[in-house]
Image 1 (tube, helix red, strand yellow):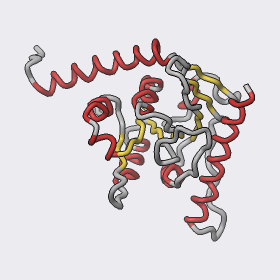
Image 2: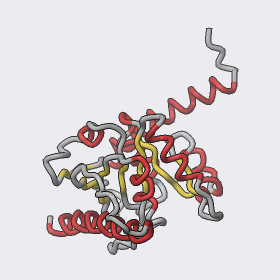
Image 3: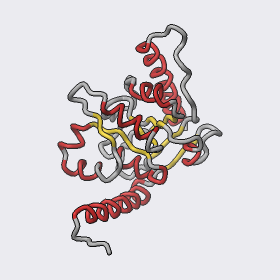
Length: 219
């Protein structure tokens, strides 16, 4: 028999209820609209047909992590979020802990985020979502990409998909999500320095998101 006064069981029950409520909220209120731009991805599940994947997205609001987790909840996608925002805001901390987020500590030099991402992909066989701009961006212009996604892919060789979310100017606007094709990065060229490789591949990923942005602007 399950005793619901047990704190661990109670936390699990609350967590499950929160997940269902969040998914319902996103479906009804946010009303995500998916735009597929390549035959390799015609449904969300196509992203994961070759196993756990690395998704890249834009960070246009503090709720992006939970929103994206909800959109991909069926496939266990873990958004990677900044620890300082995760812990300093009680509401976001409560929400993030119940939506499968992985933390990145931006206040100290640490590779724990890389270890967590690799473990999620290789051992847990679950996917991750990373925001390569590294911070909120409410503007139309896409910021320079950091190299974290390339570092994770270089270790795990996981398939990748770039997504693009335009800023929502009005609260009633739908949450649009554009998808690139499923792809893998080429290995480093012979003799190429790792820093140069990360820079070159990060630019490639940036260009893929930029193409999705331009597609949105033409629509």
